[in-house]
Image 1 (cartoon, rainbow, N blue to C red):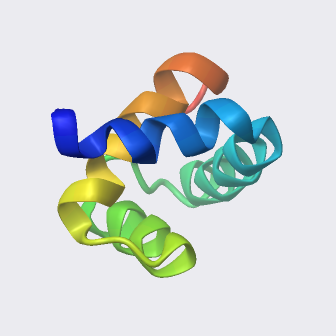
Image 2 (tube, rainbow, N blue to C red):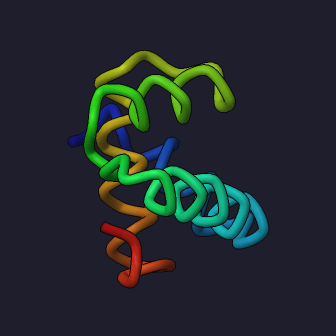
Length: 71
């Protein structure tokens, strides 16, 4: 998780980014796509320029802290 720290800091420092990710994930949820599905992780990876592993960590973190309503 050490390598992921700058990643998580970027969201802590930028709550608007977290909200944008939440909005995107809610849209996927509305189509029946889970936030931890490969499609959702790939979308976050593309939008943030991340590897799929980093995108998975970021998604889990953002959902946990900023949008617990997202599934």
